[in-house]
Image (cartoon, rainbow, N blue to C red; front, side, top):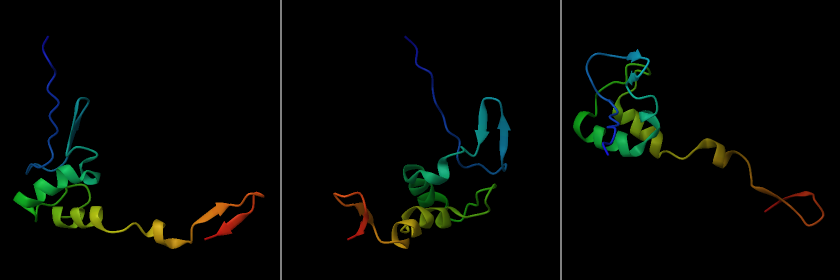
Length: 86
């Protein structure tokens, strides 16, 4: 049985492009370290045509701590149903 090839085009010099079956660059590449990391190794200064960010900047966004995690102390419900700081 033949398998379908799933090919995601991430880097190219032609800017952004879309058709019903293909979007370049791939919509989710900015959020995938397994894509951004290797691309960074070969083209650190390449700019995403949609955001204008370089691969170096996109990689930094993937590795920095999320502000939402540090914004408020964690809360949990006590045995009587009240929120309690810990």
